[in-house]
Image (cartoon, rainbow, N blue to C red; front, side):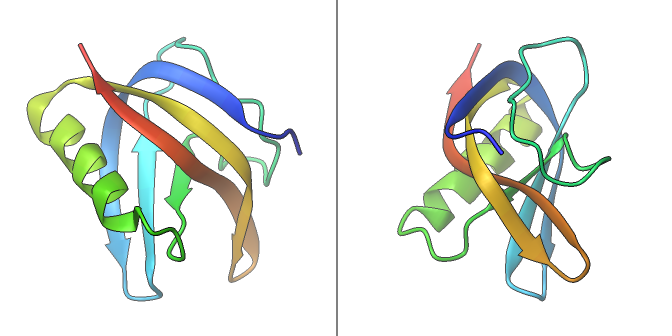
Length: 98
């Protein structure tokens, strides 16, 4: 696991709200700078919005705006969020960019 690794700009492929109180932002694998967090294989393009972050709603809003508008995002991932039987990178910073 690497601490605070940046990524982007990259397109948002999907934003999923799950009843297990988690929000998953899936980003495109289009060659943009990828974060270096190492959680589980196959989860590199899934970013989890931390449910305990005081900015959870704001991060969700930015991700949703990016998906709806077709704009790209940049941001940072830090650590892994564990749920069920796998771990995915935790989203800590998200910005909407052209």
